[in-house]
Image (cartoon, rainbow, N blue to C red):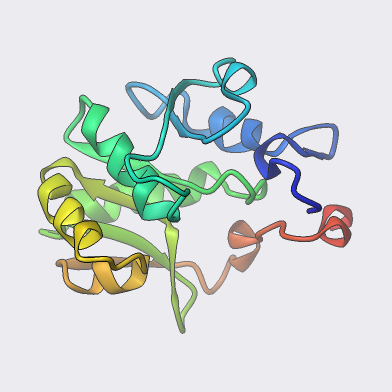
Length: 171
């Protein structure tokens, strides 16, 4: 995306971050946004948290920062660059977590998990911090070390659409 902040790039007339925020605002206690720049703009959508680790070390660092300020038993994680995410997907993740004994509930497309669409128990803070201190950064690796529940979205894959290139904005 030419170095632009993906969450603030317009898709169908509004910033991509607004899609996730619109969907979750009635489902969560507070919206936390992991951002390393453009804090003033992001504050219009929720409380901005910065990574705990230097040099922007990936999504888990942002999740760690959010877990450290989260005041509810769970942290719902959604990417800012997937504007087709649906309220139904969020409901499926929440419902699956409620009926399971999982520590993390994650979207799965029938073949692979999509780690940035997840619900994470707050009591995993220490586990995640230990994982990050060890030098690891891969979400799927940390998830696989936890008790997982998966939500199969293979019949509605469009909700996982990720916008990574300018050409993707035309979908």
